[in-house]
Image (cartoon, rainbow, N blue to C red; front, side):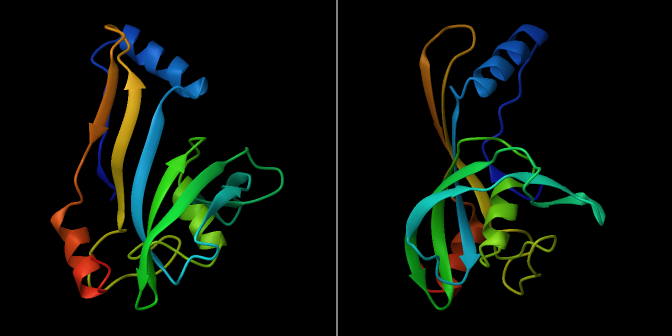
Amino acid sequence: MNTSGIVVIPKNGLVHGRLNEMMRAGRIRKFYTAVVEGIAEPEKGVIDKPIGKDEADSIRRKVRNDGQQAVTVYDTLKKGKGHSLVRLELLTGRTHQIRVHFSFLGHPIVGDILYGRESRIIGRQALHASDMELVHPVGGSILKLHAALPEDIRLLLSRLELE
């Protein structure tokens, strides 16, 4: 919710089952682009921190030792004016994973009101599902999907001079 970009929706139970198997086996690669507060240091890395439910809020998640393994790979594409544009790859698929990991690092996603703060420039979190790679669950061909950044994130980048 409030994330733009690629969404894959199976048309039937067979495809749904195959996509779930592929996800569990790590055979679907998902990439996101996000604008985060602050300058991410180091500029690239792997965040391997377990995520579990926040006892104080049933919607929120947090990094916790007894949580499920969660791994996010990131690379800073641009930085400036106290913000960074990062490309992320999810190696696991936990609820709110990117949002929790970057908030934990002290770099919440711009506009993320659950893990950060509201933005005057963008009316949602600046998180975009930009690319996905998978094998077609029926035909077997390799699919490489791409969704360009939407206008609201492009405007945010322009305002923050991260173009």
